[in-house]
Image (cartoon, rainbow, N blue to C red; front, side, top):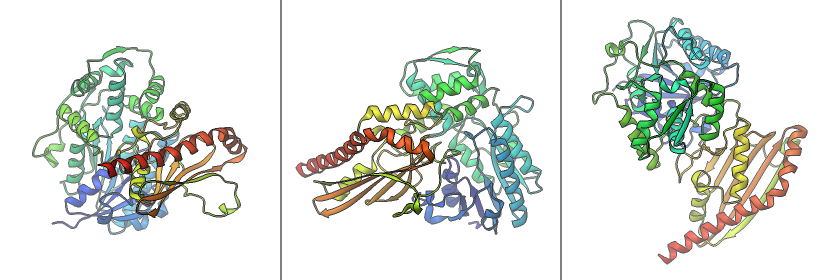
Amino acid sequence: MTQLRVLVTGATGYIGGRLAPRLLEAGYQVRVLARSPEKLTDVPWAAGVEVARGDLSDPQSLSAAFTDVEVVYYLVHSMGGPDEFEKAERISAENVAEAAHAAGVGRIVYLGGLHPDSADLSPHLRSRTAVGKILTESGIPTMVLQAGVVIGSGSASFEMIRHLTNRLPVMITPRWVNNKIQPIAVRDVLYYLVAAAEASLPRSRAYDIGGPDVIRYGEMMQIYAEIAGLRQRRILVLPVLTPKLAGLWIGLVTPIPRSLGRALIESLHNDAVVVEHDIDDVIPPPPEGLTSYRDAVRLALRRIDNGEVETNWASASPVGAPSDPLPSDPDWAGEVVYTDERSKECDADAPTLWSVVESIGGENGWYSFPLAWSMRGWLDRIAGGVGLNRGRRNPNQLNTGDPLDFWRVEHIERGRLLRLRAEMRAPGGAWLEWRVCAIDPDASRLEQRAIFFPKGLAGRLYWYSILPFHGIIFRGMMENITGTAARLNHTVQRG
């Protein structure tokens, strides 16, 4: 068994979070790089990897992480980033190349985007191509794998297809719906990435990878509808529907933020088909063959139905999302902070009460004033935020770093403490926290705290503008969580 040491950047993201455990299974020594290592505390494979703190935009933070590493996986992208993301990605790629040179890294593996060579590329595909060029020209042996639409439970591309098709029997789409696409199952992407660590690499270059099917994007939605048991969808093509307008529409209809939706749509402006099969000379296809689009959809839906989504598109924090920890208690460093604190005893044992707390959000809802939560979610979507549609990865269990509607799990002590940090658009930082305390074997107490750290006058005005609703929202949440736990406990006792 080889003991090759590999470094995975982007380990909190969709692909990186799935690649790390598969590299462990292949026998590699795995180190992962994360800006916020605490997000990896609860992943099942955490004990098997070495976690290094670092930021690709900060070259000084990379030195230790790249030391004694033979292969570096570059899996960081800024799909939903601000207008200057191309410059930021170029700087990150240059920093990686310099750190790899200084550490004597033997190989870089980069996952880029499938694209035609002569086409006018979208900003995001153009940026990915530029990153690949920086790495292949760095002097370090580099393998660039170029994939198109990735199909898997929780991938941004699949979630866009799933929600558009589920919710809209009639769809208005841009002309890209008739472009040819060669989708690839996420399991096949991971197969190629794992094999790339030791595959023969005659020279630094890019390789196209794709699944066995070449189909039009509109067909992808119709095939999804068939497999999901839906009626065939009517698709109306409007040439005047720009990527900006389409991105706004996708942002309202699907969980995908409009910035990410626009980036995905712009990337579909041209055909995305494998034009050469040179990858077969260095990495043979999987022994069982490449996964068809139909099978990839079936596998993705089965995992969603079984609550087995390993990672999803929202696993990585959105660009610009707050990342500072909760301001320290008790004096908050002399700053203004607003809180709403409540507690209530519950006629249920602590484990039962905790199970209700941990299942909050997503399809389970927020246990108070659903209309208010929906309105806040829609306002956030209109403002360009993530809204409530992100849902949750698993219906019953949360891990540190998990997205949860427009919150993210900042800290969890299973059975005792859950703290969420807001990723909604707001003039300040917001947290929501619950503590479960056992009173005796048949009773417990729930302590609930909402925290807001305002930024300037706008933050103070925001807090006081929603203050009249706190009694309804937070009191109702406390009452309904404890009430649900008591009913569950009563049902179990009767059973």
